[in-house]
Length: 152
Image 1 (cartoon, rainbow, N blue to C red):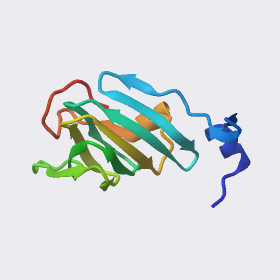
Image 2: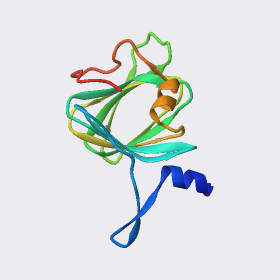
Image 3: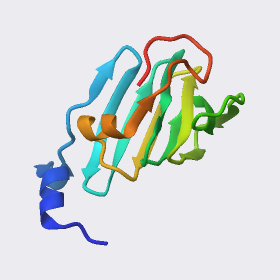
Image 4: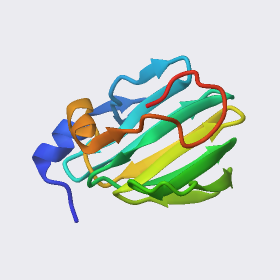
């Protein structure tokens, strides 16, 4: 499905880079765990590059409607999930570079990064901060072990 002109202008402003059309990326979110770079913020979804420092943890939340696919570019992630509200222990998986995983809506999930890791995250919803926070429910405790630098 082609982009509407207004969506292209809003989410993918173009400039010439060395004689080639390049995409101007939005400013990254940076903290002690690494960074999140918005690659695409369209009306119908988003793509982000997330870097995570060794020993950091992310997620420990669930989404009301959002789903996402994570593709591991480098490093590894220990990913845990369970249905929302379950008291059962979460199921744990380990994903390495070149592997991908999907998280559906209404799934509590957490990620631990034993080594520096780079992920591409493709989500079905727009992820500007306010929209993201409306769809997100943070858990009271982590689903996955590891050093708690901070969670998103």
